[in-house]
Image 1 (cartoon, rainbow, N blue to C red):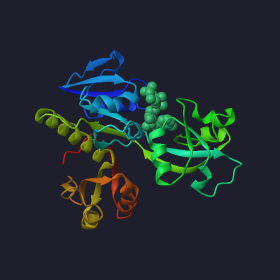
Image 2: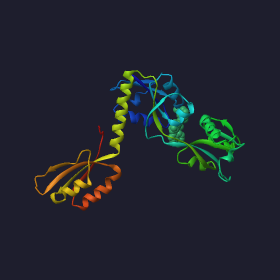
Image 3: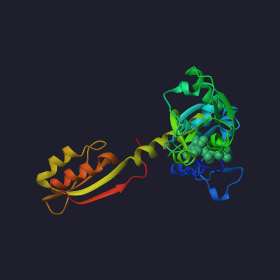
Amino acid sequence: MLRIAIQTKGRLNEESLNMLNEIDINVDSAKRKFLSKASNFPTEILYLRDDDIPGVVANGTAHLGIVGLNEVEEKNCDVEIVARLGFGGCRISLAIPKDHEYEGVEYFNGKRIATSYPVILEKFLKENNVNAKIEVITGSVEIAPAAGIADAIFDIVSSGGTLVSNGLKEVERVFESEAVLIANRNLSTEEKELLDEILFRIESDRISSRKKYLLMNIPQKSLEEALRILPAMRSPTVMPLADKEWYSLHSVVSSDELWDKVKQLKAIGAEGILVLSLDKIIL
Ligand code: ATP
Ligand code: MG
């Protein structure tokens, strides 16, 4: 049985549960308790504050965890980052009052910087030979300059709207974060096998979400050209139609190329084009 720690509530909770459901680990979020078992995979979910997730995975209370890379870095815990999950994207940045001139990190010498991420900030200041005072506050960091608690802040930014509404501007992007899957470093062979199964499913899900299944009818005279336009995993499936002049062509294309391919295929006479989403691609 693998125990996976996820955030109880907050920005990563819903997407963590969605991700587990996408890879067919069914967790009933309505029946959420401190600990709940998945119905169809040997896992149980442990609900925690995100601050506590790196620690419980490092000490083995949970085998896996889903948490922001920023928390992993800040808590400085010895865990393995086994997958980047593509949600919860944000950055931690330095911001100063918007009417101040800024010419480089030297600006921060002698300044007080408010943050909930003292470890990441201290590392950055050290690397840049800046001597500043770190004021640790949890929550509402962005009001610290106006409240006179600090001269600048080091905080999470996603759109930047919160900074603007507090009269601040972002001057250094220090740390890029997204949600990651972390694992304890001492998993048993059986636990590693379960983790591999989870990673395999995540990868299948990821590949399928970037691809579309494309079906169309193509006149015989354009068939060769269509095959040139549409390389598939091996090659496109071609099926003759009752009408000898036409074929049905099926293929998988990457979402980025979809509209370009559709345009080219229409130009050579493709008709009845259908685009379908793929649930999973197993390689
Ligand atoms: P908890 O109660 O679990 O301690 P929290 O208040 O510390 O929650 P949230 O605000 O729910 O944390 O954010 C969780 C994570 O979501 C952050 O650590 C970060 O990785 C990510 N995140 C993505 N975008 C943002 C954003 N705009 N603001 C804050 N966090 C964000
Ligand atoms: Mg937290």
